[in-house]
Length: 297
Length: 315
Image 1 (cartoon, rainbow over the protein chains, first blue to last red):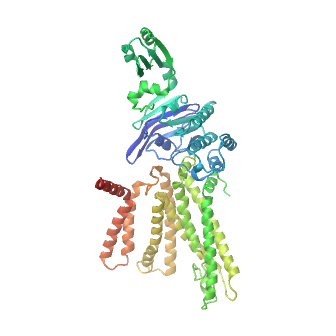
Image 2: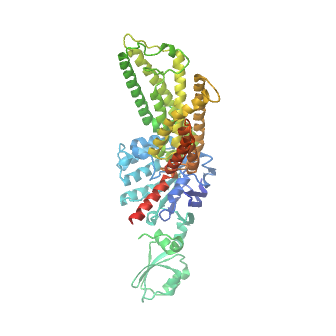
Image 3: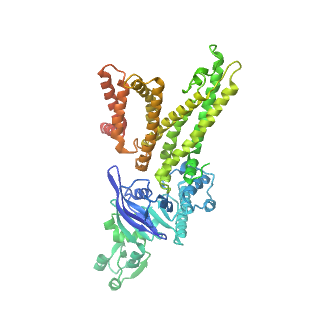
């Protein structure tokens, strides 16, 4: 079972927003979609969901294009956070709509999750806070029981408790390999520890498709304290400096081989400590120069 | 009420607004009927609510005090076409529909089916209520007579007129994306149809064809019906290609801007210069409609230029 995006392109007002987007997505995967503001992340989702008519390309599920077999789209879930119809409805009314579209919509679980998060079913969607709306969106996504779930900036402007709740629910949901998530964010920290893969949009194209496990297996983040203030050549050549504070250096080495290890230890550092490697470190160290990605710190 | 899930979804979505339209229609009819029953008493020239001679003819009946097909039903059809299609766009329900897994073709025809099921039911109920009010409420000493020829013809003609008015607002709501300008556009066009029907009547009765008044009416109705069906099918074809990035713009299909402009200019020139005896009226109508149409259809760009000019002047 896979969802395949093939050659998807969309122009708006004669401007190419996304061009020739290709990727595959399987249940059990959490994919992060990153890119600078306005790069076309939401347009990609809207085009995938048939809100926008694509100039070229298609989305297919298990080999069937959703343009030809629209029923396949019921396996794909997306709530547009900017443009959705939920505003005027009360939370108890929403299952009537989603139940008519998603054949496996679980109304009991929907009600239970509303209670769990202390959301009043009688509240109007538009009266909810931003965080509550994000929770309702996620609850609808999960209870739709769609196989492929798209979340557009699900953590945007939320407090740490709600962010944790959302992240936990997403992780729990993919545990049985029946569902997959595609999560967009312009903040890499959000996707850290959540995504298996990261797609990077740049200049309207999919610039990279990273498997984070592979990258993490090769890379290391090291904190070093050297005897003098001169940065040795081995560090300049083999690593990316993340931070320099006096004689304390924090470096990321994207391809940490035994040879590099030997060279570093040959410097006889006063301190040599491996630090946890974040997604942001990886991008900063390896990819910032060719991604044009704006680091957030 | 509806067996198919897509129809149930449409019903769920639109039942409130359709119910509101039905209520408004019934209320309007009730007030109209009671006012007619009240005013007839003051008219000492007649004791007939209905002209007996006319109601027995195979012609639509629309008398001073009683109309066999209420104008409120025409308004209900006009309003329904406007709101059912436009509200889905304005409230972003189209986003949900387009990702629902139902084909756009099914969505379109289901929306039409649900709306017309309600309108037909409203036609029957409202007409029955109206007739009952007259039957019970006709003052003592007055007569209220109905006959199948007048009733059936009125109902048929009224239903076709409703269908046509519905098709106009329905189609306009597919191509126009702004609420205020949409209402102005369809209201203006609907009003202009009075002038256009006059032109048609002239062509059919005094121009090439020399038809009688009744014949011209039936030919007009058939053309009206065909035009409505064309609008439904054309609307279905356009709906298939509706891309929501133009939500909130005047024209949801930017490629239609030039054709709409040409049709608008020709139509307005024809309406305003048809009965004129000199060519000056045609030229004035053409120039004014060309200028107005350009300003209306290209106004976002003109608005931007105006703001830029003002900022330059202030800066």
